[in-house]
Amino acid sequence: MPPHRSTESPFRNGAGSTALVAGITAAVFAFVPLIGDLITIPAGLAAVVCGWVGLDRVDKGLATNHREALTGAVLGTAALFVVFVVFAATHSAGG
View 1 (spheres, rainbow, N blue to C red):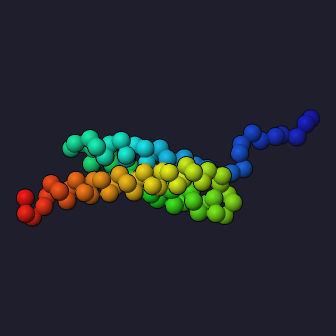
View 2 (cartoon, one colour):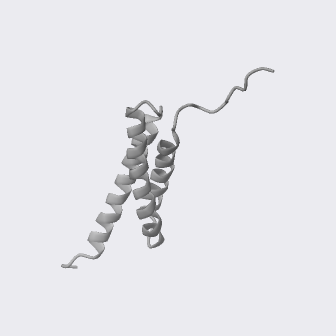
View 3 (cartoon, helix red, strand yellow):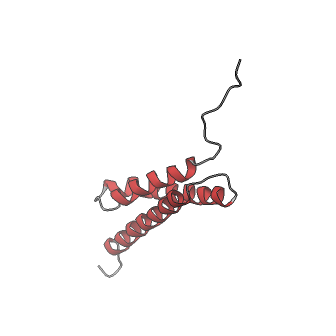
């Protein structure tokens, strides 16, 4: 009987891929009024955290998706920044 060959990748690319999906979601919903904040904040935070984990795995040689992890973290950070700016503009003390 031939030995069992695994078709799974030895790399752990899940965190970087999750960061990319969450970052895209956060970036899209950052510009949707009202309901967008409820989706953007958790998705943006998830993108940033998963992006850091993915980049750490790339540095350790456990993952191969540097671009996905970095893009997800950047999109998540940008989306959170947009939500913060909109919140600050709409809730200003002088307004």
